[in-house]
Figure 1: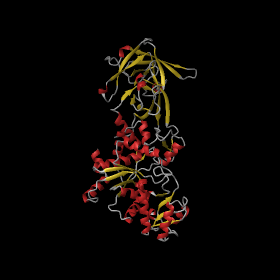
Figure 2: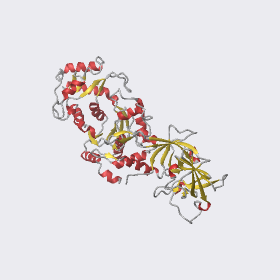
Figure 3: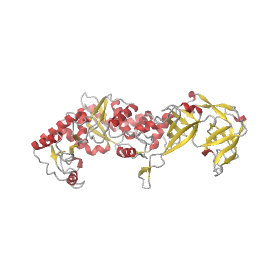
Length: 547
């Protein structure tokens, strides 16, 4: 499967041709992952991380981590630290760690060269005026009245912008390209703006900052990047990327290649929207287990192996499409099914009293730790006359093909005995609060009993030794409305005061288990304490996705 995916990776085909033609001479293949530190990374970034780092690995090249920190208003050291943690957690190590702000002086000097060549000018149009002058997709734009300002005057004004003599928005530096270009990005784009804001890396050293479309090609060129891998929305920006490097006569400039970004059903991957959810307290934080951030997925219990497998399976495409989130869920199930042990947990407990079992007796029954891995061994669980089962495992008036507990029906209690439901006890409101049952002592699991068979097997925990835990089940954070547009799901979190088998009292934060018949869970890294365990649902056991 991996070989098939490798064969259709068009990016690697381009690199193979470049190596064959010796386009970059003896230079090693060099990629980079260049996030802006204005939020936490999400699953879409994981695809870009995997692509850039694995491409460098394949060609025995190098991959840099570079912060595209050209907008001081939105960037923060917290985001820098989170990005590094995410890249490391996914299993990658960068060859160089850089900041776009490391190159601010070089970028400024390059802008001066463009002015000297007559390829950039200082403009005084307001933002609204600039929009009016830009034109439309069908109509050319109009040239700024400042477009032909003398070079000496442009140099003086640009220097004074750098020295802080002007206010935000008072002047910008624009590239002089073509106001009639069919590509609006080429209609004299802004390459520098004034921003009197403290930068997380350079402090107050600068008050003018380069725009991304100007800074990006220079960052790549300075670092000797050979192949600059970008998502598809940058395809229309590639002519400007090439223009900057051509006008500056940059030797062996990098090649920008665009690939389809990851779109996932029931998922919003806009850092702006995700930040709003955090700021408005619609979620706990960036690492809320419902969030599509890498930090959220990590806290949810996803593994780096599962995410890398997912990124490998979706491959690299030239056209945008939407991936079903059930594929991501399939990958984590596949990764965990042979790694974690099973435990018995009852989320919505209903008391069962076995009336013919000795009231003062507790025995130990043996149960396997993993159905998938017999080598994981077995464990002993207490069994007594008082137990808890799931409320949904009882139905007073059973539906067709309902094989669990109902009056008169017999089921197997997992790894224990056949149990017959005899009576349902209700409270004053008519709610069933207890089941009176009997057991057949001849039917103990492992005894070789073959007298009869039952159709249902349910799980349970011993009421006398059960450990109270908190279980948090998750639905998708986003669900489609009647128009198919994503909206916030008001029922994305359901919390249960559950009962677990005794061994879970020793669970440590970050430990994963399969809860029998429920799904995969992890002890929450923030909320789990020595005295109380909180478990996040990683994924349920059902999958609608077919391999």
